[in-house]
Image (cartoon, rainbow, N blue to C red; front, side, top):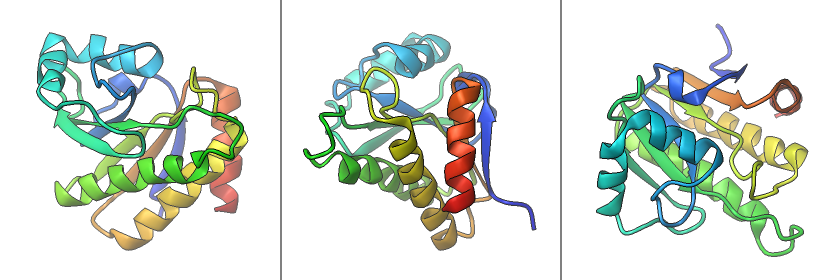
Length: 170
């Protein structure tokens, strides 16, 4: 049986999956990096919809339609800003993945694509973030046989290799 967890390099906004995950800020109103790219690709309808949600606390997630994206849905989650690791960042990052998987299960989603949450401007160390991502994905897949495919989408080949290493040991 093929592995249901894959690492790919590329543009998450072009993936035809049931949902892509947006590494959002607490306002959910767009920002830089993957958040800005998703908002641009989804069109102004996404921003209008997000305005109705009242934001999202760190470690939680909310789901919206994908609008102009190939993905049917966007799951927005707010990762922690890295402050050295002693401010609860590992638990908050793990909570992001768990919240996304809970929404995926509640909505009957079969395929999901994650960016490297908190690894951009939020400064989370790549190796530590990759270990959390891989571990939470493996755990969620074990508990949700309906989830057929989870992609960890890297923005560059260095991040992809970091994610591959983490998934092999998770």
